[in-house]
Figure 1 (cartoon, rainbow, N blue to C red):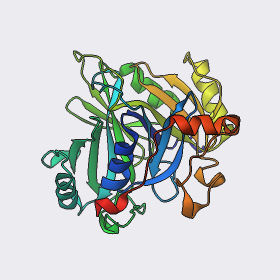
Figure 2: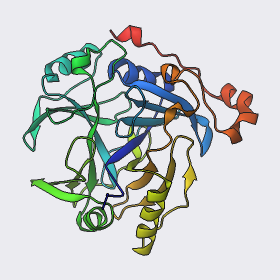
Figure 3: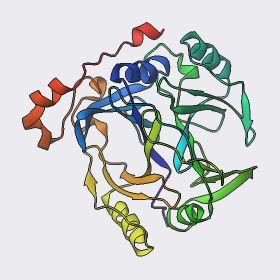
Length: 316
């Protein structure tokens, strides 16, 4: 039977200054700004989507940039590091590029036999670039990052939890994940075990709880094919005691939300319909797109949003 969940759909973080956010993810990292819209639950705040050329599921890093937001702190009960997949020969390029733009970057680390680097964005958001030969996706670049070094999408993510047992039961019994490997206090799970579906639990029983604000992850979303498969997942979760929301229309996908036992907010999002429903593929991310219910208030909404510009030419 085809699995209902097939990996990571998107990861959403809280950010600070909107322009700095666009500069970092599109300028420094080279991700495409595929959509500028609003936080549907806070219409005076942007919602940016960064990904490959079409914003395919498994490539989409999204942000809620709150101007003036204080920095959060990493801790337990949070997704603390988002890992992107890069070609195996590109670590030296990325170390040099990050240092060029003033980003402090770790030495080359090794995890489960693969090499990676770790750093933080301007808000303190934890990011890793994992070099590997097992990702057949094409990377995206505006041209400032050579294609052969470009980011291909997500590799995986790290959940920092005080214990793993109940979260593991959720993943393995109800979300089509399976245990793959252990390295110290780190436990790895995946659907197929390839870049884009990997999830690590780092067990930290005495860790302090994280504080959610700028530089921390708001939620992680997992992929399901369509509305029908989403309803099946919702039913499974509800029948097993999880407090799951109703289906919410996010324009480019539909979503359900619930908290996993360790405290991280999980979302199940549909692959359909995608980001090209209201913009041509060649012009994704150029305009502020609003849901139909917000259109009557466009003038007021745009007035409250800080103007941003895509300045990728400054990051060659």
